Length: 285
Image (tube, rainbow, N blue to C red):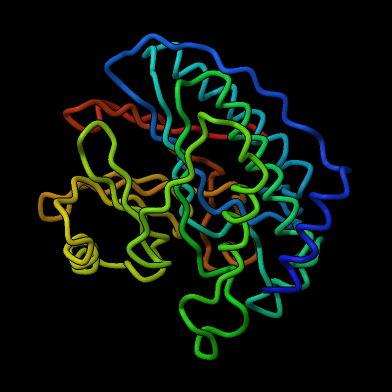
């Protein structure tokens, strides 16, 4: 991790990255904000099969398409702030031998590439919202080695938040949410209600959803998660759950499981009463 930190710092200090030019604009207060998922990007993998094509260039195009859709929703509801909830698996990683063969970039290139995309994504949103709050948690694809051989906190996704924070530190209306209970869950308060963010690899049953909400130590209105690569909303023992999809769509793993995945994310409109409505953002690619 120290070596990766040095590589990233050297890249930023080299001056080769595009500069972020920011001018703050005043926004009129409204009664709602947007919750924007940013789950399971799996940057670095290259897929070309009968159902899907995905690579780093397509991923960049999807970020741009996503911004367009977000701004359409903002215009419809006149939303004031936005909360980008990034619930893990930003990189493809090297957790399986078969996955290593599918990756186009090595892990360092994956980290730097997706970090730059996320930083620019947040910067663009900051020009259209009063405040942009970024919350993130690590996913299972960024672990270093086999699951049985690594600690739960050894996740390369954590470097991405560190990079993004350094990259956009001069943009005053972007807030990095550091209210983490631990590296597997965070809390964000939106219009008076607590939303709990997790990746989902540890939370694969209704019992665990209820347990993780209790572990937060606060009254949780909603649990947000990813991991299973499709949009879904539900209630578990009175707790709202919102699961967002993935950027990657159908890969070799889903083909073997006979599952067709639609690349999609989830955007929700939140008021002081909770989630007013939600939008499936299905990418055209």
